Amino acid sequence: MISIPVYYLGFQTQLNCEDHPKESIPTNLQLVITISEIFSLSFLYYWFFLNTLFYFQPFQIKGLKLKLVLLCLPFYVLESAYRIALQVFGISHSKLTPTQRINLLCFYFLSLLVYRFTFLQVIFVKGPELSNSS
Image (tube, rainbow, N blue to C red; front, side, top):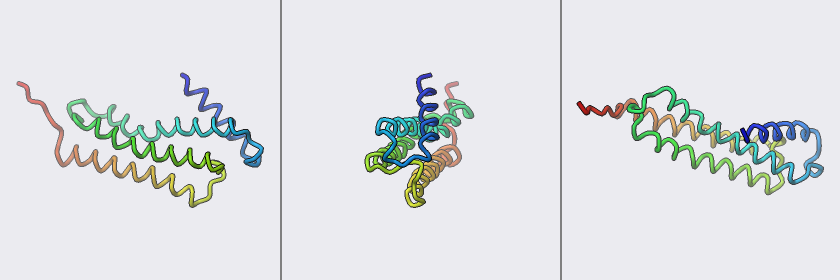
């Protein structure tokens, strides 16, 4: 419930700041935009993991949950650090050059490739770990 006002505030501020030069936007406001983007990144990076939990039974992904979370974490931290570095150096998120935008896309697609490779390797190559306790 706390995150919804932060997202709304960040979105509205970003819309209001689009046409203004970077120097006229207060630093606190730029910080709110960066924080709201970092919060929204967490949902983006962990969405596939959450879908995995909904679509598979616990015995099918036994031992895979921790591995998938730990795979998402470094990419999330790396992209968050990149966005914070852009903020520190005074580069506006709304006016990124294509070169700066490619880095963000590479982080995300690389994380998806690693995530899905690991997921498919465990599910289809090793097979689900069935516990036959009977």
